[in-house]
Image (cartoon, rainbow, N blue to C red; front, side):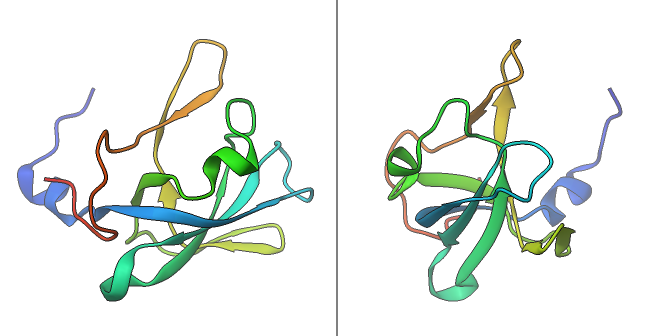
Length: 112
């Protein structure tokens, strides 16, 4: 594992947001959802593609707070423009478990 400096880590904007829309993403190579996430007044709403269909239904995701990197460049995924990276952890079976705050915090809160 390569060590990074505090200054390098400080550049990464990990923020909380609430999922406000979830739709299927049939054009994706791997099964995924298209998410719209509200990061509050300062950042606004961003969209992302997330390969989390194995563990989460669309209904479970609506209203869920997530942690995302909001300062990556836009990534084109087929016909979709992903504006942030929703974070999670891989299980041994390859399914992704979302990284989420264990209590509600304001949308846009920065990881401390």
